Amino acid sequence: MLDDVTKRFPGQTRPAVGGLTMEIPRGSIVMLVGPSGCGKTTTLKMINRLIEPTSGRIILDGDDVTGIDGDQLRRGIGYVIQAGGLFPHMTVAANIAVVPKMLNWDKARIQARVDELLELVSLNPALYRDRYPKELSGGQQQRVGVARALAADPPVLLMDEPFGAVDPITRQRLQDELLHIQSELHKTIVCVTHDFDEAVKLGDWIAIFDEGAQLVQYDSPERILANPANEFVENFIGSGAGLKQLTLTRVNEVDLVMPVTANAGDLASDTLSRLQGEGGQNAVVLDERGRPIQWLSRRQLARLDRHTDAVDPKLPVIGNQATLNDALDTMLVSSTGAALVTGPRDRFLGMVTVQTVMEAITAANDAAQQGSSSAPVGINSGVIERSDGASAPVEGDAAPAGQGTR
Image (cartoon, rainbow, N blue to C red; front, side, top):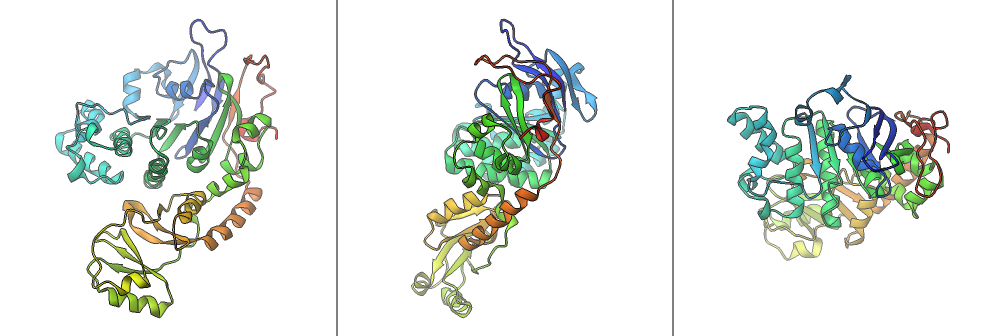
């Protein structure tokens, strides 16, 4: 929790962060969003004291950490930056092992942890542990950056626009991977992003900042989209708020359809017989680890002898942590009007269809109107004069941002 935290930089008349009190619920993902220069990154860096607060307290597990050694604090808080921030002269394994070595872990424990984390971020340890960053794609570097941040099993993970430097398709996959990891580890994650759609997809709670890290609204994605606090929030959300509602429901919250499946090496004629018997049109071929590699029509099956282990790079695949918006985007490029859904370690879980998505949209809209969970506390004290000449709320006028005026 941040308790009345202020940061003033020399030579500036206004504080970068002004009297911020903000509760960060344990085990949740909190997204910090706002215009450039609003103080969201400064707020993030004060949590691990890469930037020292001018005043106020930072409470971690009930202890004020503003008085302890900064290096010691940072060894217990994971930190992920844009483009991974890997050391170029060190292998993947050495990059991940940096903090465990500082903590004097033995070699066997470090090696086991490196392999465990590479598996967690869906990178085969045998293939990647001895590579150097220059031998990795941007998405792979970012995965290693997440693994490094998790190396010493920190309770808190800070992420500063971690997916901003990769292409949209890779960004979606990395977002899904983060949600898979969170479903297993339940870390407390604070993430800065400039992308409101990303905040809606990833966040349990979203904090929208104006200048001076003034909290304008701090609430669930559902309630922010349904009830923006004021015109500033409406403008920040932008047009298409209705479409953004699709990001409120994830694929793992809807019922999946299980198509006919086959394994590499099976007779295609057997698969075709089962497909005809069940009235299906397409069958999914899986590899030895249960991952989808092909999606074949009846006509394609009739021309085959046995299923091969060749991977179709154009498969319409999404993770089960993906949003319905992601699902619809994927379906648009699929000739079958559906998408294949994978879970942890890319194992096949089933299929999502347009009809399933449309039914879920109606349910999500109903749930947003009935939601009643209390938002975390978020408030600023003091007056911050903005560059447009207006003033931010003073203490007493600013209700906790999660429960603020709407």
